[in-house]
Length: 427
Ligand SMILES: [Zn+2]
Image (cartoon, rainbow, N blue to C red; front, side):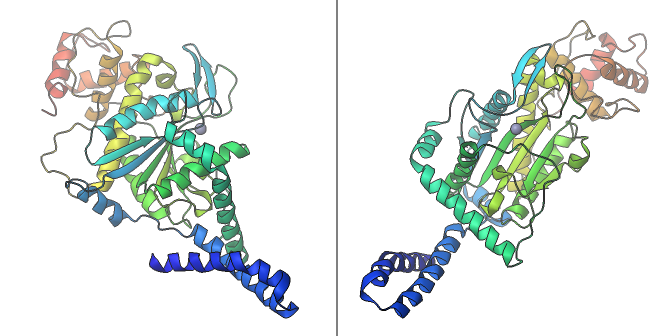
């Protein structure tokens, strides 16, 4: 660190003194020397501006362990709801009304922040809510835009010179993104710059995917994907490790995207500013596309509030899996917020609460009947609604346990069996 500070000082001295010397007192050849020197100096300045220290997996695990001790810094999590309070993101008109990705992202972010804030290992920052930027970010954007621009330009110049030297290979994205307009892109870079300056340990960007579709008709694809930095970036290894744990948690209950370029669940990308485009981020950063915006469990407000809390919980648990190298062996916490659950018969397509049906779908996943034979999780995501997927899976459950006379509905005998298996599971 001391060494770096010395270099910065030297560069400043040269830049401050070089020009007046060259312009007046010194002969021409000195000017040439000085110009060359200034060129080197400004390159040095650029190199220093972009120099960073990506966080490693052991760094973060160490911080997590240390955060349990008194007076030690917490693990600093930055949650960024995708897009801006009044601008950008997908929109969709469903039977349940108009939904905007930027509002959905803010809604899910609140749940996610809730889990981290309740855990004393973490200090949690959220960039905005549905209405406005947090005051920290509003002030930062107001006062720092020239510095953000210069910082971004320095990263761009550094990458461009590395490309010329053959030390960096441009890779085009597998999935097309809409380019953010300049001020929006700069605010996104600003979030990364702030994250570096404030020693953020991990960044989670929240989005909902879209795929071209006729208005008010769902698109072709469903499911989640996690975007991570392309492998040449300094924060790629750590992000991939983090994202793998979150992926494992989510995929147990949530369909993975069936869009061909997203089917691996983790998608590398070089151009997404959020995950550290231009090698700009020290912290690992994942961009979550939690589902497609037209999926029914997202458009229905009642289902959504349970579903988003569950998505947030799985994300939080994935981060825990990543950071906590010594999880307590007596950990009794459930893998899902939907269980344990107590059912009261009847639960059918006409009766039973959204929570009953989510819990039923989740129990049937755990018991191995859901999705029903011949269907995928993308055909049959958990929705909190009792339709053909739930009915078929429930019939398989009833066949397995020899329950007769309640075909495809939760009557008394089925409720008893469900309660026996899932009402007190983790207690
Ligand atoms: Zn988005």
